[in-house]
Length: 271
Image (cartoon, rainbow, N blue to C red; front, side, top):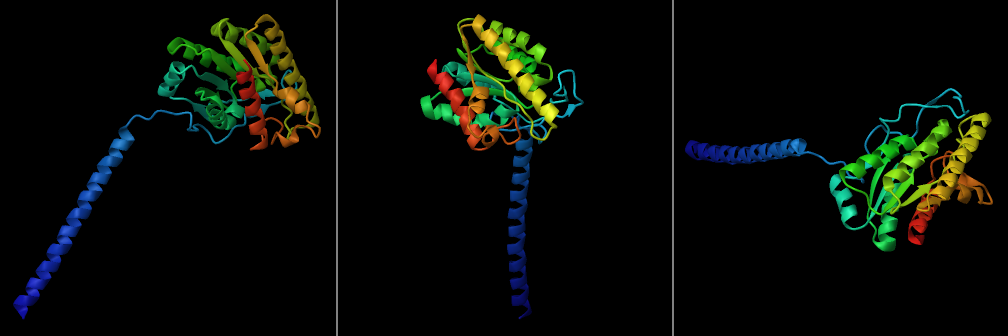
């Protein structure tokens, strides 16, 4: 009996020993796989939001134009297409887009809309808080590193309400970089931040109109500049823009986002 019991115990021990060896092996393999995943270079795609968990730019004081002074924005949320996607867009005659926080929120849906409508691909450089100068810097960088497609969307200008006189020069820079043979679709501006005092909301509207007049003046000089009339759309709503804007600037979802994206897609389809 003793011998049989010893044999049974040995068998049990052998079984659990084998099971333990298998578990250890699997853990080692999984651990090595995890190391490879961590070490593998990662490319930021246009489907990935990176940066701080905010779209909104902190502003300080009334500033010289009543809307405040633009605060730090470089750490805010952004979406930037991978190099592979940028090159695919160029190869298939797609679209480049440079935008601010509204585009960060909305451009994923815009990509799907453009693909569904006509099969157009789009590569984006959208960064919350960036003024037109930073977006045009990105346009220049992509032009130098990759070249440009024949259609470019500029969805910036809202953050220029803090310094409206600087905007016109950036439009001219963008048109010079794009050249006369490409079409630039520029979404105009509407801002009246609902959480701000009435004086700031009024300044936001006045500065938005100032930005939009500069766009209109640039369009008189550049026949390849098309203005996407977001501000006019909002002003024309019988019940006001509140249904389309969640805070007086950023689009509501899905109503505002869908309306704005449709305006952009319609402009592209119309030319």
